[in-house]
Image (cartoon, rainbow, N blue to C red):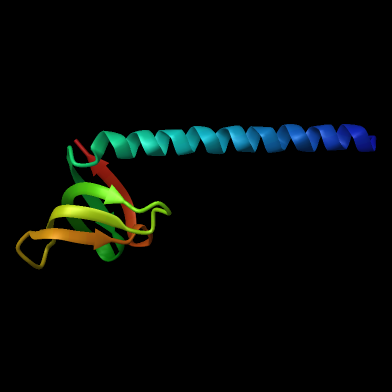
Length: 94
């Protein structure tokens, strides 16, 4: 291969990656906007822990999820709590 064709292939691959990232980011933002403050979510976490609550907000870098009416296995519902996305395996809602 020539240097030019290698460079063109790399640019094409980079564009495909950028387009895929943009698509996934858009889907993620749509998901957040569709559930924030509207639906109770189930959060499956490490060590088989399951909690439920309504997502109220997330911070800009998605380092914290603010949850309202947080129901945990160990206590009465907590009016407002913060979950770390690094502790969450899945988020689901009906």
